[in-house]
Amino acid sequence: MITAPWVAHPEKVTSTQDEWTFRKPEISDGNQVNNLIESCPPLDTNSAYCNFLQASHFSDTCVLAEKDGEIAGFVSAYLKPSSHPHRPVLFIWQVAVAENSRGCGLAYRMIKSLIKRECLAGVAAIETTITKDNQGSWNLFRKIEREDGEEGRVTVFLDKEDHFDGEHDSEYLFHIPLAI
Image (tube, rainbow, N blue to C red):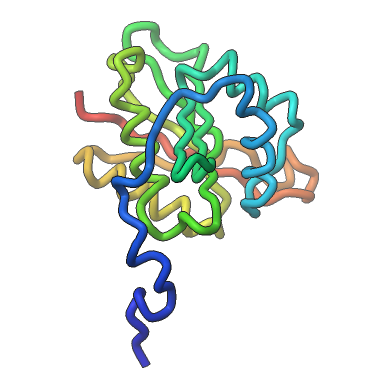
């Protein structure tokens, strides 16, 4: 049996990508960002303080999506301090999408809007870490990899046994060169 998306999720037929607005987060968004991340398992939750820092100190490298005045998604990222100053790497820490905005390409659009910011014009690559079973994230970043026509590479970043004492799945680092 095949189910058409509009039958399984009729609310997504009326939800168009043009309804979202993308902006830099502000410190006043910190608590809402924290609540969004908490509502998006399997994302690791951070302290509210961390999310306030992301929404203020790192606002140039984060993006917040809104729809009808409500937060629909958030991407936290930062420029890796160890990357080459003329070819920086943008590390995408977390991608969170509210349940009622999933399946509409919002995560992809947030990342693409972030990469297009003038302050990130020289970014040579993006990186993220993903656990083996997080298929949504693998699909998202493989799509970005395909579109840039480059070959990404995946390595173990944090090993389940060596780094997490068996208490968290291994995190794989996905490095994606961007076409400049």
